[in-house]
Length: 122
Image 1: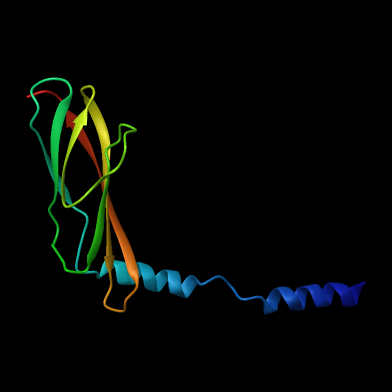
Image 2: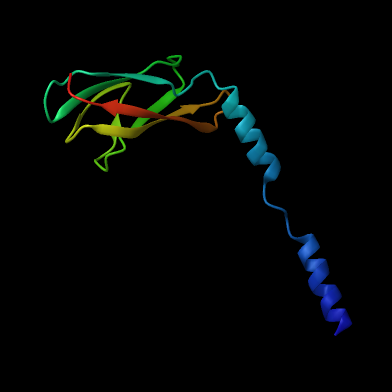
């Protein structure tokens, strides 16, 4: 029985540990990427549905692959550097922008930013 436990222990020690180093490198690479995920918005609608214009405001980089917007109201995602969205009612929504880009080493990286957006007719 003791030999079996020693064998199990030896096998566990021989298993590769998950790629902690790679994950750390990926996070570091993403931190130094030449793009961000900041954005601004402007409420342009004066009645319900309330129209809001969103725009990406970080560095525009040729390395950006995509922009994905989550508007916080359960509707379909938006895409693009600038988007317009209609909200069915006034409120405070958590809007998130995901910016996916390519790093100098060819790997892909996604940055995101979430902001509380107050939506009220103008």
